[in-house]
Image (cartoon, rainbow, N blue to C red; front, side, top):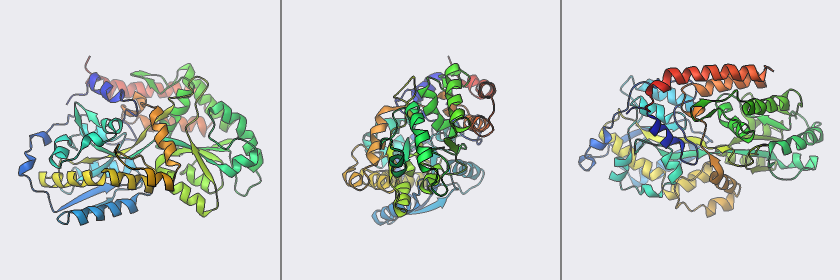
Length: 451
């Protein structure tokens, strides 16, 4: 399977997050995946009696993972599912899964993030799942088509959507009320810049208070969430294969970001967990994943804190289509035996069916993966989830530079740290970033593109 321009554009034009090879370090993008799953006669295969599932439990999802596993085993008493903790985040899961490829104990199912599944496919570590899902009578046309097609390459799907999310704007309603600003997310960052000094002043005397706004931790988040600000200013990490972090628009956007921290002093940068900073009372607002929604609301309620959520703000150039998607899907390992692959498919079909995806969404805040999922009970309990569902309709494909260039997300985080934490010159830092990203493109991607 060669990486060709047509294949990348198929991924990139799906209406929401084109998610593929990037993120921090990891497996090489060399090599080509081969299609062995479609050559198996699944009618002659008996599902294995035991399989394993490697996850980082994002969005505090381990309890619901364990419940759905127990429900599956009750419905399928002949198949045991072992849940394996793969680390604290998607990158640690990816490293553990890739390391396992050298041995004989590869997990059968892996949680593959938006910036990892394609690299697994290229490394020949996972298999296409269309025939497998057909063999277990899964109604794949019930998947949200855009979310499902995020994992489509060369007319095959390589994962099923599960932990899917967008960033949301989270804010402390009481802090906003004390400042006399509207009880809603700002429509634009310029509007928030008008509110922020009032929020800062009104809450400055509260114990432990730091900032009106907290940027998310840069590692893993900078390349993702800063697309919102870049797009709002008319900039981007890239325009298709044109690498553009140093464009006038991108520089203006990142200068605005730096000014909010250094010059205007109403924003800070989280060292670890921005929503945790907010529920600790240290900040009034932040941007974070929908996967943090349920846990954040629960933590806030325990502290008597009122949290609101809204769409991501727009910018002076673009007020809409400024929200990227993200999250992860579930893939099946190539090294697993056909018997284990078939059992894994049965589990994935059950785990993501309409009823269970609604349960998963209720427990975490992640988006339901099936169009037939009845979300009425979920929304009655957590109406804020509707915001995430509504925002899904106005999301935009991520920049090629973030999702197709291996290691680019890490380089973006380094540049953001220089600009936001070290007060570095914005233009020169972004010019250096362009040079680095261009080098990655020329070395690792361009040679594999066909005209």
